[in-house]
Image 1 (cartoon, rainbow, N blue to C red):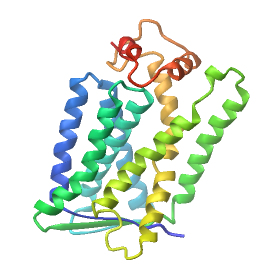
Image 2: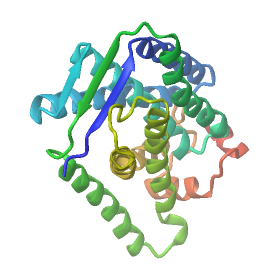
Image 3: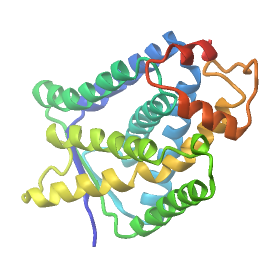
Image 4: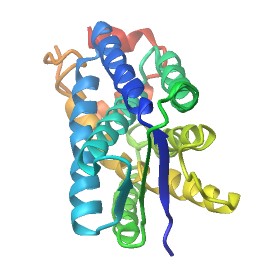
Length: 264
């Protein structure tokens, strides 16, 4: 069964969002979240490689009216690739200002479509993709990642060395849900769909599958990096093994003063 993901927005939406991305990146740099910025940029390009290279060139799932597919996809990929994965990195590192970062992103996702709709120029872009050709592959990636994490936890007797599966699952689902809900409430996602059930199907399916499929892998990358280096791209004074970093991350709490100390 195809799930159609469609967006319809005024071109002002693009320029407003680019301005937000610049300000968001500047705020992260101001707070010395250098690795967070690099992760966001890197996954923006990963999103573009997947969206344009696979979804468009391989599966021919993308169509657009009112704009250039290449440039619109480049903006979309950098926008949500950067924002999603910078936010994910802040979540899994349990940043002490996680609430503030989260509200900033969520309010923007909700307000930007409304601003563009009210003050837009009337130049509308409609872009959509069908998912039947590749959702099976995405499901396979998701299952392999979580099956590996579950298998590790079943094998691991030490509770302090187990992966917090509910934590990474919640991050993967809620980050995508926040994005999808903002688009839906702002009138961008699933524009033109008459049935609410069709809109809800896209919201639920994407929230469970799309960003979430990468969570076990990005968490492993986070542990491997932060075991040796800090958020400021410096070597840790005391490097850790992967398991030691997992135990440390499990003991950390959001807004904990200890987090900022070892990242300094």
